Structures are given as structure tokens and as C-alpha cells.
Amino acid sequence: MQSPFTGGHAKLQKEPMTLEFRKELFDITYHYYVCEDTGQQFTNDEIDTLNQNQVLDKYRAKHGLEAF
Figure 1 (cartoon, rainbow, N blue to C red):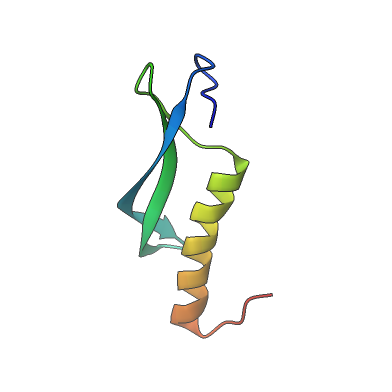
Figure 2: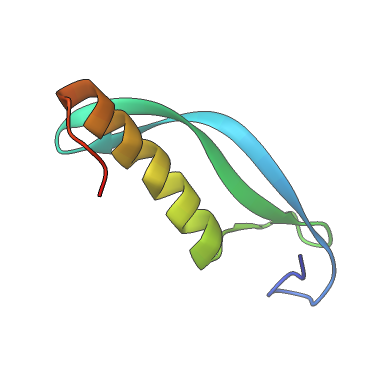
């Protein structure tokens, strides 16, 4: 991945994170990129969707809702 800050290389990182959705907390594996030149963290639309879908899937599973 190319860094939007410097145009250099960015590395994909993952870490456990707890996010709130509809006043409930869900543990996910949060994905993000780190610019190797500046150390700044960032995401893109694809990674944002991945992170959001993890939360939505856990919410649906907890409440017995089917995915569409």
C-alpha cells in the first residue's frame, strides 16, 4: 500500500480493539495501515468496510439476525 502522506510504503497492521455499536461493545481485530516514513496510522474505504463488517456480524450473531 502507498502512503497518502509521503507516497512511500505503508504496512498493514492488526490489533484487538473494542468498538461500540448501538450502545453495546464488540471485540474485533482492527485493521489499519502505518506509514513507514512517518508512523502515522490511516485506513482506506476497503479497510473501513472490513472493520465495520466485523462489528455488524457480531451484532447480528448476538441478536440472531440474518445478514442480507
